Length: 478
Image 1 (cartoon, helix red, strand yellow):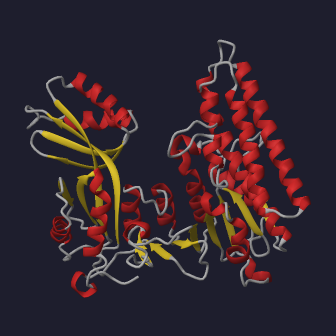
Image 2 (image 1 turned 90 degrees about the vertical axis):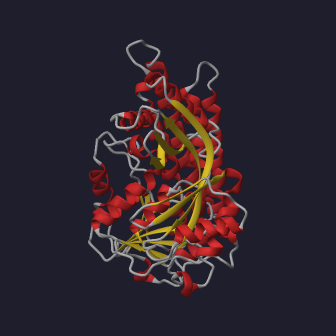
Image 3 (image 1 turned 180 degrees about the horizontal axis):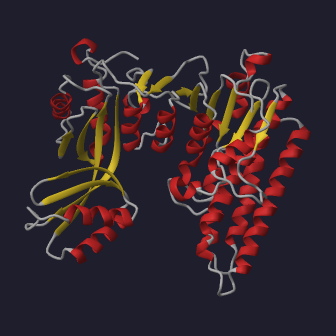
């Protein structure tokens, strides 16, 4: 690949469903000839396709993968695969208008679907013999199915761009029918080996098949990991994530579009705090890759291409400011043991049990005889943790409570009295906080509230800490 002063840019699934709009703005816009290039695009599947292939991200409704894993005799997964093929066809018909392009995309979907169908049938037959266990192959099946969505959207996008006169190139990192085994770095190097970004626009799949197994570690956060590795490995000038909204001081639908501020410029430290609160500007592992490679990240609104968006860099924040207020539903998992004081091992045992059940810890507090973890998990999963710990510590009292965290975040909160002002804001709104946490690093302050009070808490905190008097509270304008 010819080295160039290029950017690596990612488009998410929701935005991909409107990719025909992006053709005339983001991809082309006012650019001509050479100005079109020096840009690589990493794309997710069209909106909803990965949900159909795996399972619905929010509701858990089973897709092809989940149905295949639990299939006995009725082959529901076959019907689900047919449903995916139809959804893919509908998606590329919304993007393509030339009959030849639609026919090519239809054939692409047919070939991939038939290949996947044959693979799943053969695996099911193979595992009918006692020497082969299906559960040992499910991780590979999950990866294979995931790659179908990104390959389809990337292929359709290339057809669309070529029809518009752009020299676009389809770069399939999904490993389809590839007999070799590659690391992620090797897969990227192989895929880009013949690409000249000065005269071509590579459209790469967000999923990359590799020996590390992206889904095993990152599950559905794999596309941002692929994106960040491409940017780091090719020494990109900048990595850009195009979303359907600006990175703002709060959810505009909640606090009002006239009150939110676009961040404009922030640090990877703030991005990490947002990730912890479920407000991912970027997957934390992807952010680490970019930060260590010295590649700045920009988050933009895909449908406002003239706006520079928010630049995220590895930098210290000198000016004190509350940059964002956001919230997350959690379960407070509290272990009280009267004899805990002065005894080592309780915390380690709790952490090991939470890790074994794959429960994500958002925050924690402790005192002499009580350890409380605020976790992002269903009560069903947390009850399993309770059962295991109760067996280990039969005299302990373990309680669980559904709560929410409202968090005020900023790269530098020193001198702003965020804890004091936040508590005052909640009191004025008639909200009684259950707890409040602030660390000496002064990058976030967390307020624990009842679930039904979260939205009002966010609005109250945002009004007091962000929308209030700029000079008084030190909030920098976006």
